[in-house]
Image (tube, rainbow, N blue to C red):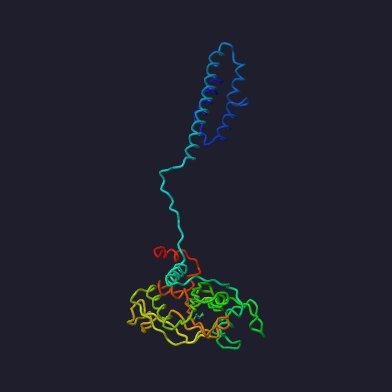
Length: 345
Ligand code: DAH
């Protein structure tokens, strides 16, 4: 009877497996602890008749050794498995580091800044939350001038009676012209990149915020010819040396005379195609000679100094360079769109 139980236990133990130290410890307790099954057989040994004691003693000792060895063996396998699991597999292929790309607006802004820095322009900056004076009044927009309606303004604080007290989100970067002229004496040669806001419904062709770059040059004897030459150089650097420009008369309150500049179509080279609506030209910026009233508002003697200014939309230029059809792409942060500019770095 006892002999059979020894054999059965041995068979059972030989089948044991353990996947970790805890299950292994549970097995050790089950068989080898004080209350364990193997130990229990030792306790029964007392009842075995003297003539069989020798044989049973031997078998029992064998069983105990067998169980101890089995547990030890399982412990070794467990340790080995754990070690294997923690090991770093240096043969695995590395996960590539995902590197971000510059935003297309940043790319084009940088390109434009680089061109103008080579022409001697330095960077200037101003706040996005502005007062009426810097966005409108100092720029020769009369209080009731309809030109104020040219740009749908976002108001932070609106004073019905005194527009001069209005606090607004700047609707153009021309405000930085004023700030710079107020604190700096000519010669002034600056460009001011920045974000601007207009109260427009968001569509493929309009957005409530976008980016502009303003240019300003004030010195003695600055002429319209200087403006034209700088803009020609700029257009050729940006769109290629065969690019032509043309200036059309226009109106802005802060420049006199004012003009809008077109460049020869970058797709057809001026022959006329669907992109340029068969005119051969695409509009890229507004410009003109700074109105003497603006100079005087900023404390610059308009009898001594003259200057030119220009303003362009970065989104507009980016659309022309990369044929982006929907303005909303610029602010949606779709990585599939952004990754397309990887090669442009
Ligand atoms: N501020 C104008 C706009 O947002 C752009 C502009 C036109 C700026 C002519 C200028 C300029 O400096 O001379 O539409």
